[in-house]
Amino acid sequence: MEFKTLVKEPFCVIGKEIFTWDGDGLIGKVWEVVNREFSNIEDIILKDEQGRPLAKWGAMSSKKRDFSMWEENGSIGLYLAGYEAPLDAEPPKGWTKWIVPGFEFRLGKIEGEGYFYRAFDELTKQGLPPVAATENWFDPDTGDAYFAFPVKRL
Image: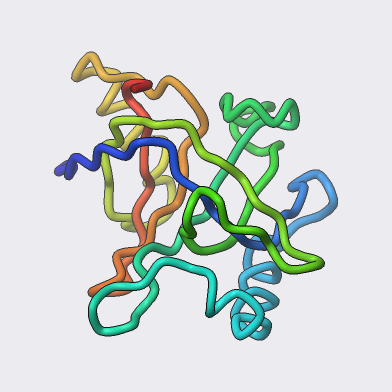
């Protein structure tokens, strides 16, 4: 199992927030809303030289809003589907802003059912157990989805 390293100082994500305890299948549904209403945040998110969104995140936190791990074996928590924006960005009405703490992440490309648990176990065996809630990170060049395991708080 291969991992890439991503070191991120605190960063802002502006998106739509859900609570996983509100029902099944909500993560896919919230991304549908974000994609449909993307024009509302398009002018405030960070972009690369070609004008493409710099980073797309599925940010996660426990219900305490402290970025600790999801509860009940990783099934209960908060999820923010959105895009990276400047730290001082103001979200439009109906959107939510989170400032994610700085972390050193290990990125594991999501591959098949149960990948999260296999990757979590592998990182733990390597002496790098995640120290906070795992995030989703989407590669802006390929669109591939990754779990971003925070292994060290900056």
